[in-house]
Amino acid sequence: MCSHLWQQLFYCMKYLACICHNLKWLCVLFVGETEETFAHWTGSQDWEVYDISNRRIQMERVKVEAVSYSYRTKYQTIQALTDVNCSFEESKMYAVVGESGSGKSTLLSLLAGLDLPASGDILVEGESIRGMNRDHYRRDVVSVVYQAFHLFPLLSALENVSYPMELKGIAKKEARVRAKELIAQVGLADKICKQFPKMMSGGEQQRVAIARALASEGKILLADEPTGNLDSENERNIVEILKGAAHDRGYTVIVITHNPEVAKEADCIYRMRDGHLAREA
Image: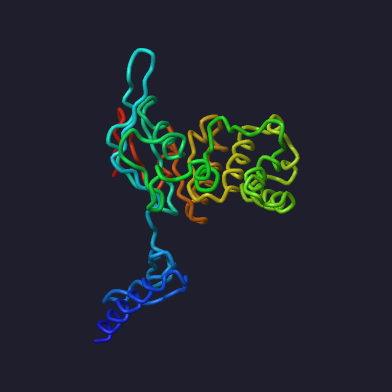
């Protein structure tokens, strides 16, 4: 009887919330006959679902639907991706593995918004990437960490990390304070802040690159062979930072890698073969 009343209350409140969603008010209620979950109304006709211990159930952030992509060289057309389907949830780290030329980097470039699929679609939190302003998407939603670091050579570590925030209109002083906090969070000493990239080791440069990616506050973090130029100790450090970004900060972290030691640390592994993607058990 009690669960039936809760169920009736749920449907009544959901109906009222749908009518009044423009007021952006918050509804908190129990759902389901077992009362093991409850939902938070977000004001945008979406529900955030929690379990009974108040842990947020992980939601799908990126969905790739039947994506194909090809490009032409002077002599031939290369089919880089064929009917790729996959999804990526928040608070998880994914590894995409496969041989060179299998299509991994092409998939990453599409996820980064550098190009659009020839067919199929990529949905980010339910919205098609085709309808987005991709400049804003790359600035506000997604960040990329590269094997070669790609730090600005004439900017210090602090300036590199604060740059994305200043680009978004954050005051320089506030951006520098936040940048210093991020540099500390990736395990670097305060002295690094004033150093230029050429004065740093490879491991230090990659940590600065990750701090810069986190500075954008976009919740999708793409990493293209982030440990490829690093020794084993720095490799472990970088992997732990990426895992922390996913598990502790709610990021969706997608790592392209050839390294099985890096891949096994992921929550989920996808394997690319000749443009086809499959999830490994």
